[in-house]
Image (tube, rainbow, N blue to C red; front, side, top):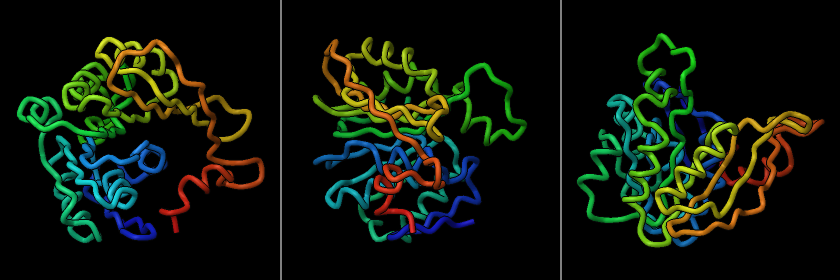
Length: 234
């Protein structure tokens, strides 16, 4: 199956995790600014890397994943995009990548596995993509901290209940929250996800949390969600 965006198309039939709202949200929300070197950890189909390439015309994006088939598909998606020369897909774990890299990144983006101690999916690919067994928050944050340049930013989308744990882990690695958005499916529902930006450097200050609703009372796309994604969705 292929998912058509305004400037590119993403095929995801060989990927355990399909193109979804979480990935699009993170790609559109993450603070790209003047980033010139970006890393997408757990790229899957490559959709977040492709959104980043569209948003930042000067940036080079490295995209890594431990799923070999997903990497092959992301490479195909990159090759067919308008930004093929700025996108690189690699079949490698973040632990191996951080060990072999001397270069550092302005921005690291990840929509990581997020189920902890929950029932495992019988499909091995989806289990790897969805569960933290293969990439714990601790390993992700520690690896990102090693790979970020001074003042570099790690941007994540996570389950809402992971907020306190992840902020504590980040502070232990010298990363401080600079932006936090709690994502609700609709008004009146509890937050399901958080979008969080963590900058390298120690700070005890917490940013004022923002709120984002995916749906409104009268529409499947709220005004703020439509505005955030308008350069990408058809």
